[in-house]
Length: 372
Ligand code: HEC
Ligand code: HEC
Image 1 (spheres, rainbow, N blue to C red):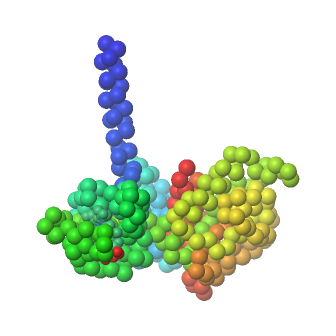
Image 2 (cartoon, helix red, strand yellow):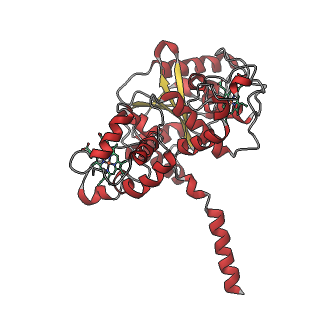
Image 3 (cartoon, rainbow, N blue to C red):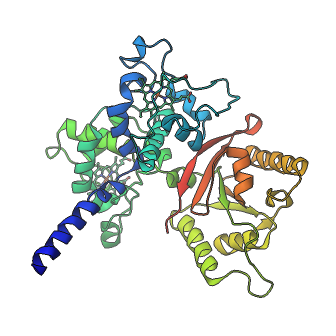
């Protein structure tokens, strides 16, 4: 009996663990599957709002590919779930979202909605269409390509240590984006350089097209950050204890070092680090990145009179829009300050990435989770 209960327990455990297998596939890949089954009928396969049902509706479904750019992840979350949609104010001219757009609150988990958002961001930024079947692509990628290109496509497969080869990083859009679907397909079929094998005779054209589409969905923020010129916002708790001689607690120090290590191991160049003058932020930034400059207007807004808070918020927006550099700018400030410019609630587990646009402000690229 005991054995039976034990094996039942392990079967149960397996069942519970099974969905986690999805957690490791790229968010945009998961998002695409949900998009195809739930959104395509109105928004169209390419997100241009020409799905079969859109024609029957009094207003056309938005052209998602352009509309999404001016929306933060939080706003998209509200639009998709329908929660607080009525309260949404928006000065970008899109106005409120009508109830012709269904409310998906009870249909998807928050992970699924984040995946949908990742796919919408892909639709709005990639110039390449998906011509193959990414699900077929993922299966083949894991079978044939991960050994060199890495399970997550970041170019860090087990083979790189064995024979010192340098596979291309498929999570970096800057590199793969320059290549058309046909270019990628040709490289896979004919091979490349000394170590990239030719797959002619092993994979069919459909399989190669699937691989190409899967590779397109592998893009991740780390790849974008590698190319520099972006602004990363981190939030530090305000009024956290930080004394003169014992600056950060051991735990806070370890956490800060983990953040720094994560950016470093991804090959991200950080040109400049600015932080709130509050000791905890300053020390966190310094421990993580080895340099920091304290800036008054990054101090927590929560205890400030409104006029000063507004001035600080404007100064922060100015900082972000006007940034230009080969590497990236890191800003360590507080939840209230970040909330004021992006409507994102950024806990210390996350970072936010913005692309400066000079006189036209900045564009929010998205919110990403730090590894733990
Ligand atoms: C029954 C048709 C229909 C379906 C299905 C549908 N939508 Fe919509 N969606 C609309 C319409 C219509 C609008 C425009 C509403 C408006 O502007 O008032 C819209 C607007 C949106 C917007 C806002 C665009 C913007 O920023 O202005 C987003 C985001 C969106 N939909 C995402 C989704 C996602 C994700 C799914 C699938 C989970 C989905 N939609 C499924 C009809 C639909
Ligand atoms: C034995 C290791 C290895 C395996 C297995 C492998 N690759 Fe590669 N791949 C490489 C290397 C090394 C490069 C860089 C080649 C260069 O630029 O010299 C590369 C480059 C590429 C490129 C970019 C080609 C270009 O024109 O710049 C693509 C696309 C690619 N691989 C796809 C795949 C796919 C899809 C698979 C699985 C079907 C795969 N690779 C399997 C090692 C590998």
